[in-house]
Image 1 (cartoon, rainbow, N blue to C red):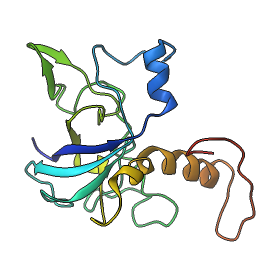
Image 2 (cartoon, rainbow, N blue to C red; image 1 turned 120 degrees about the vertical axis):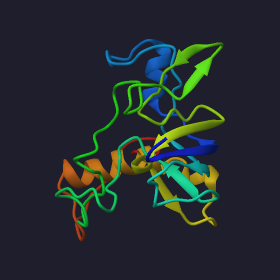
Image 3 (cartoon, rainbow, N blue to C red; image 1 turned 90 degrees about the horizontal axis):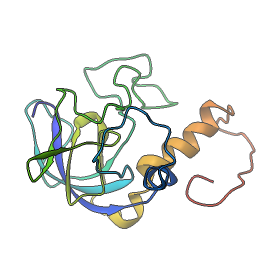
Image 4 (cartoon, one colour; image 1 turned 45 degrees about the horizontal axis):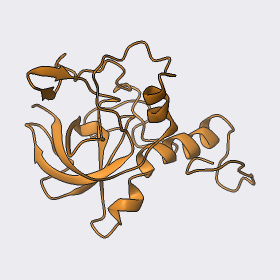
Length: 178
């Protein structure tokens, strides 16, 4: 559909957020079930809908739970050096795509989206703002973590702690976020 991208998933990370949902510990009251979890993935673009300009079939991509700035959708962060997280294209918490429908069905029943990308699947459909083209030489089994971890770890350090170029800092913790 308009401004959507179909991606064949190549690799996934498993985030604690996914485990919270599996354990029944999620406090996200907006989610509908059944749903397809997953929000750390890389893949290969299979097809694109009308209006998609940043990727073409065959491109390697990282899926992003938090939409990025795209040309023509200007916000105060566009072209900045601190983030590419678009303030006009919000994080999807509705379990549905923008048109109010799901791209997934099983035996005629709607299966809902998670973070707008639902990466624990062989294929997924995401908005163009939620896929980032990467170099085809990048190892898909490693870069799959970037879509969540970079935004959480680096974004948190930069925006919450005020870490900037030249800062000295230490990171405690395990896992990709730190």
